Image (cartoon, rainbow, N blue to C red):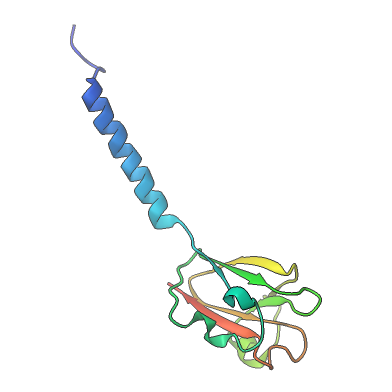
Length: 128
């Protein structure tokens, strides 16, 4: 009889270690980062420069912390961002602690409460 289907303990360890390395590398490259918009200040006025110098990837998560009786967060397109208005595709969040996953390219967010976006409560985040 041959040794078909059998391997030494050292071969099994090498194979197991190799598989574990591949799995860990996969998770390392696909793990999303969570960013808190506005850091400790939260989702508030004059926040447009918050994203400057940060690197965002598709799938990263933005956490918007705010007082839900005062603000909300809406996803908009470029036109909605520039005009501070919602479209049919806009989605509005109002929990006060919203987690929104970034899509590839530019992601636009505004507060849809009248006057708030015009007052500087809006942000654009570019995800690679």
